[in-house]
Image 1 (cartoon, rainbow, N blue to C red):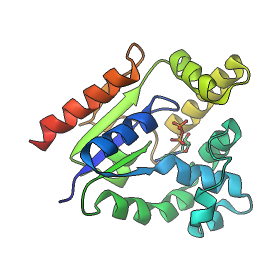
Image 2: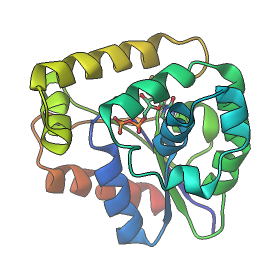
Image 3: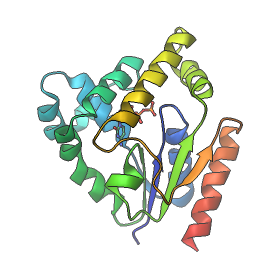
Image 4: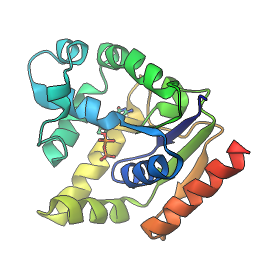
Length: 194
Ligand code: CDP
């Protein structure tokens, strides 16, 4: 059985939490595609070489979730050769046997346009910055500035810009608890799974 759930959206919208919950609920494998770009961003050296030679150790680094890694990720993510180097792995994962959930920016538009379920998870920049600040600490205004800067870069790049697929369900989680957001995602998957 091949069944792909594509979960896209801007920084700190709750994609990761929803994806993990959905994967658990349906027994699907989960790929956090942002971790690939974060690993390339923090590796240093030539980003194209880093993307082509990404190892499991690169993906296990403890510093991938920092604000700096997020910024580094969005800077290397504008490079078409970096995106190209990560494409086949993501496509293979999406169509693996047993079902898969992938979260990122371009899953429903570029990586797996044929995904059976597409969700675009979003929330206001302030709400997203607050959630990310609870995770990483520091100065909340700086976290908000970082979120806005990364969103602008992700939405305005030429290759695979962040935008909802035409057939995605948009889930605005600004006023939702995580339980409500997960329930909405699960309901949509059940509807489309038949
Ligand atoms: O967790 P958060 O939403 O803050 O970020 P992430 O999903 O870990 O992604 C980090 C960065 O990687 C994003 O800001 C994008 O620039 C890039 N990215 C991408 O271009 N395409 C993807 N499929 C996933 C991430």
